Image 1 (cartoon, helix red, strand yellow):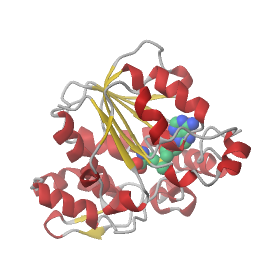
Image 2 (image 1 turned 90 degrees about the vertical axis):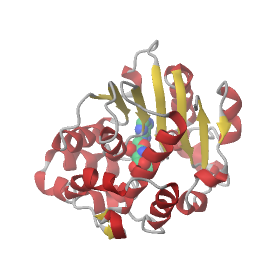
Image 3 (image 1 turned 120 degrees about the vertical axis):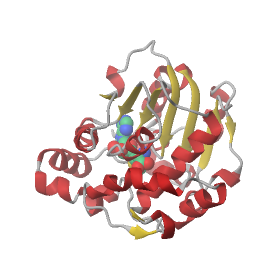
Length: 266
Ligand SMILES: C[S@@+](CC[C@H](N)C(=O)[O-])C[C@H]1O[C@@H](n2cnc3c(N)ncnc32)[C@H](O)[C@@H]1O
C-alpha cells in the first residue's frame, strides 16, 4: 500500500539523488519526475497569483527578498512586471504567505508545521517575512533530505525535518499549513495527522485538492487501501474550522477544484 498518491519509488529515489548529487540538485525543479509531484508548470504561469497580490496592494519590494530562491534548482522564470523575474511556483508561495498574513497576522515567534512541504519553497518564503520560532516540515524521508539541502543553501534558520511517526504525540503548534499535501495522503495517514497535528494546532490553513479523486474509488482501494478523507468529512472533525470564500482562491486553485479550510483566523 502507498502512503499517498506520490509515495512511489521513482519520485522518492529522484529526491534522494537531488539531495545527494550536485548535478541533479542543480536542475531538480524542472525535472519531469519531480515536477509531476511538486508542480512547477502552472496553468496561468503564476499570473493569477500575482494579480491577486497586486489587487491586495502587496508590497512589490518583497520580491527582491526571494529572488535568490529561484537561483537554486534550475527553476524556469517568468516575468512579472514590477516584481521582476520569478518562478511561477515562487509567486504561488508568496500568495500563500500573503494569505497567512491577512488571515492570522504576524507569525513572528510562531511554531509552524507544514505537512507535505515539498522542497521547502513555502517555508523559505515565509522565513523572509517572519522570524518564526520553529518550522517543522513533515514529509517522506527522501523529500525531507532534499528540503534540507535547499533550505540549508538559503541559510533558513529554525527548521526541523520530521517523519510523521517521529512527531511527538503531545506537541502544540500555532499554525499548521498544508498545500496539496495532506489531501493527497491515504486515510490512515490523514487520521494520524489529524490526531498528532491538526487537533493540536491553534490555527490552520489547508488547501485541499482531492475532489478529483472521488471518481477513482477503485484505484484508491487498490493503491491506498481505501478512500481518502474528503473536505466534507474533514470539516466537522475540526472544531471551529470553516471553508474560505472562493475569493481566496486563485484561478489555478479553482481549476483544481481546491477548497481552502481555515481555523483560528483573527
Ligand atoms: C503536491 S506536493 C505539494 C508540495 C508543496 N506543499 C507545494 O505546495 O509545493 C505533495 C507533497 O506531499 C509529500 N508527501 C507524499 N507522501 C507523503 C506522506 N506520506 N507524508 C507526508 N508528505 C507526503 C510529497 O513528498 C510532496 O512534498
